[in-house]
Image (cartoon, rainbow, N blue to C red; front, side, top):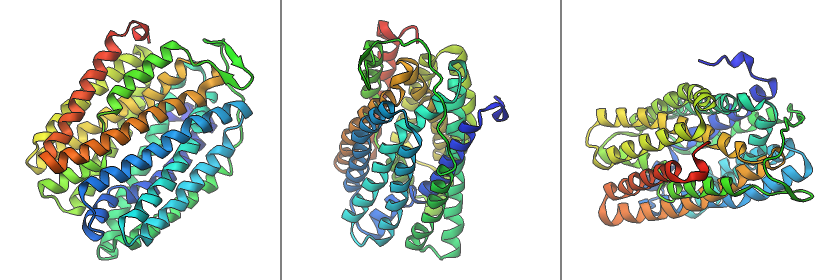
Length: 390
């Protein structure tokens, strides 16, 4: 396994920021759909709507924030505002007496994600040499996901201590969010690791991202348009009959696998190429979602949640590294932003459709949609000539 001690300090510090932010977010993430459908009485279709709209907001902001970050040559201020907004969204969920305020809270949270994501990922890319990019992104995902594991476990402990007081746990999730903002204040800008541009500069502050990058985004959009929010796998576990604590433990298992596998698969993409690792991850996703469509027992859910972590490890950091690979150094934040915007808008569609399919036909239909989309996207990545050497 790659050695984390060899990472540049800037990558490690960014990882700590993401660790504490994810402790906060993942204290809430497995609880929010449960809170919506039980305490607030929202239907499953509303869960899909909330997650889809929130992600779409993040997606529309990502390319704008990325362009401004590239234009001004600054990453840290965007990260500070982004993580700060996400922290402010947490208490709003605790105050909610009806689902519309949860929609507002998730939208503020994801607005912060939209502001920070492109600049943060460009900050990581600026901090390492090209040959280490996959490893750096993989380790960042490991830091991030370790926070998810801690956050989910912490929510379990707090639920036990507070006798299942969901609102109090949501309030407590604000604390690690504030800690993440404190760590950002300790970051300093790093000089960019530039290389010969793959595409020309169109105008000051604007870089052409190129046709190969556009093909890549198109392939990813095919997948994202069928990949609904992870809230649906949580609801599926509840649907099979598991209690809240068991669902959270499954979510912890998924995140442990994700955290352990991310550095390995990131480094593997440095050696074998991003496309091969991404295609493998998409095929794993297709198999897992097919399993969620027919799952009927707890032990099957354990296997599915664990293998789902492998899919995310093979696609999340590697997908961003590939986006950065395909554009000049001056367009890195914009590239991550465009990828995120496309993904988020497509995810809005996927989540709304999945919620409707679940309501009308049953859970199997929502997961069948994801299975088909992942297979189509894998074929796209394999067959488009422009992507064959990536």
